[in-house]
Amino acid sequence: MKKDINPSKVEDISIAIVKEKNEINEDIWNVYLINQKSETIENILVSSKGYLTDIKGVETKTSALRHSIGNVKSNEYKLIEPIMENVFALHNEYWISFFLNNEMLDKKYIFLAETIKEENYITIPIINKPGVMIK
Image: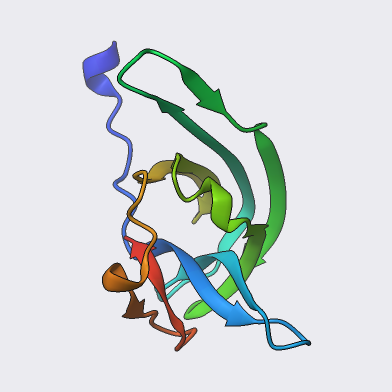
């Protein structure tokens, strides 16, 4: 039975953590979903959480958050959530589910601990701001 199920591979959907400025010119970070497909993705749900177990076995976790962000058209992006700099020391996981051509798809994106830092920044496509991205 299980061998007969062949889910489609999720491609051209990215999650980016972008460094921006707020209205009083302070640095802030926001998490975005970017649709680089040629079609609209619909009914998007995102689950996010942070976690880490150190070498002594001590666990650190954030609350799990769930977001419904609607639809994202081709070559557009949408804000998922703001993110605090103090959770960059944790693994930050974003699990997205959405519909594309009446098929439900999902994919998990994990920003590993300590990887959200300036030396890893790129210019994020479509948004055109510095940040870290996972395809």
